[in-house]
Amino acid sequence: AARIPNNISLFLNIGTSTEAVARELRNHRNLLVVTNNMNVANILAETQDCEVVVTGGNLRRADGGLVGKLAIETIRQFKFDLAIIGCSALDRDGDLLDFDIQEVGVSQSILRQSHKTFLVADQTKLSRSAPARIASLADIDALITDHPLPTDLASACEAWNTDVVVANRDV
Image 1: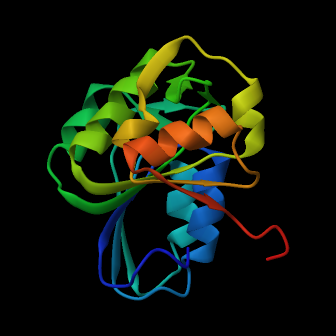
Image 2: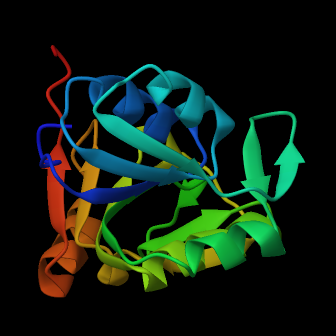
């Protein structure tokens, strides 16, 4: 959250990592947050200095995510200063992966509509696999994680100019 300035438009997508970011944004000022995550909307609902727009779409009851064509069409109405996204898995080639093809389409729309994109992903994402590809870390401005990356992936990120930030675990 310290890397997110005040006075911007921001997209927060589906996932517990983006929900954690939302909790840390409650003291930010003058934010426009668009989300397809009902949990993010609820977290920020009482933050007076934050306008919240919810995309609409098909509700996934398991996680409060909104996916599908309506979510994509809403996202296309904006150009975001910054997007904070999560993923289900991150492979050793640097590909962001997910299980739900509808969510992949939404995430790809978010990337197209954002000037800058941060991926928030904890180390468990590196030990998981998922079948659908969202994008590459080469398409991301920064990866914020809780553990240093394997050397080969860290080197690839450096070559792609993707910043890797290991968050302070004591915060």
